[in-house]
Image 1: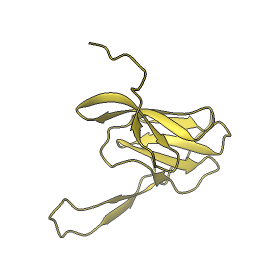
Image 2: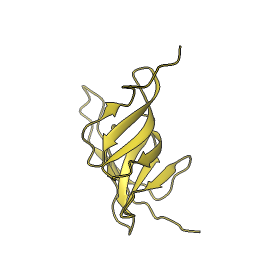
Image 3: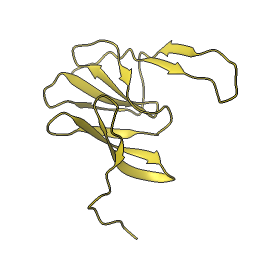
Length: 117
């Protein structure tokens, strides 16, 4: 059994119109999360606290590549390791989404798939 130590540094920005300070914190463990290894084994994609993070598989600091409150679940790497698919709550419901490993190119993965009534 393998154990992964996660030390994502999270930053929470104040609400719009607030003059409060930026708050940073470290997370050392989490619950109700999923982890997916990249095809080359170098990176892990993690859903933690509703956001999508990537962290080097050898250990290190995690980097959030999604919004703070997207309710992201079950990330899975594409076979070429360039994109990560996940379920996320956006636009009023859960859908399948994909994002590049650097956090760019977020898109809803519904093109070409029939929608259920």
